Amino acid sequence: MLRIGLTGGIGAGKSALSATFAQCGGIIVDGDVLAREVVEPGTEGLAALVDAFGSDILRDDGALDRPALAAKAFQDDSARGVLNGIVHPLVARRRAEIIEAVAADPGDAVVVEDIPLLVESQMAPLFPLVVVVHADVEVRVRRLVDQRGMAEADARARIAAQATDEQRRAVADVWLDNSSSPEVLVQRARDVWSRRILPFAHNLSARRIARAPAQLVAADPTWPEQARRIIARLQTACGHQALRVDHIGSTAVPEFDAKDVIDIQVTVESLAVADDLAASLLSAGYPRVDHVTQDVVKTGARSTIGQYDRSHDQELWHKRFHASADPGRPTNVHIRVAGWPNQQFALLFVDWLRANAAVRADYLEVKREAEKRAALGADAMEHYVAAKEPWFLDAYRRAWEWADSVGWQP
Picture: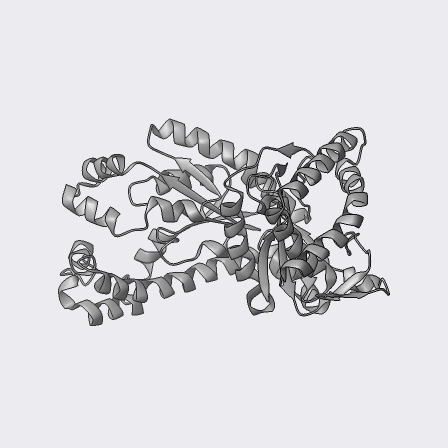
């Protein structure tokens, strides 16, 4: 089962997008619908709202008078916080009940959770994929006035009370613009479903990873931003068992050409902890790759800074490896033990590259040659990695010499 978080500002078009995803086969869990359900007459939610805002938020028939509640709840941040504190937990509980029912026989089901305040409630890291539907503010105001009959001032106040576009962009794996016609949104939504969402769900069900070509691309200035989203997702999935989560590899080096793969390192206390995380990481969208169990650079395991262990203990290079099932964002997740040489070197390597232009140029040439060799073989990625290995044998020593010279600490 793949869970998707869907959000967007009021008037942006979440309902239209949800409807299209439903036509594609998605199971829709609508936050607005649940928010109405949990405050129906006779519910604990409605009773709590009356206690907080007064009985004048009720209609004569005992149902919630939504405009009356809005007039009180949206007048300041404190009142809105009270409203959210009552409704959000109830909606979350009801949502969990629905998800649990689907998870009983998940297969490659796609559950789309339509959550208006996903950003505000900081729920984005809970989902393997977050889709944001966007429309320009003036377009949204016009829709709210023309289609919902809101006063313009009320529409602008509701928009201003929600997350900003910048805040939504920060959590969006997929950004769908709905500033034009409904037909355009439907086409864009179907394209995202067929090219990304459905393959993601199939991969996750089969515990299959999405592979990127062994091909260098120009440095993408959004790689760090994408990595931050992934790190938040992994921190949420791993909880306290992750001692630290870091963006590593070439995409962590500014203005440095690389394969379009984000590498993340999760540091844990032991490999037993890494094994315990397998199910949580799978739910987050990262199946385990069992044939990758250790790193290849073993030029003398360095167990502490300034000290080499000449025993070449291969155990100190073991790790657990996961990768994303999302074809739209290939990602490698390396789970390594704190203080082991492979964990330290992954952190050192990024800082060494950042600090040394000559090393970056040298490594880039090595990568370009590896790319050429990979193009000649059937197992492109394996050839690419193998072609770089001779360079890493010497780079390991050079990097640690630099670390000692500048007093680097992981």
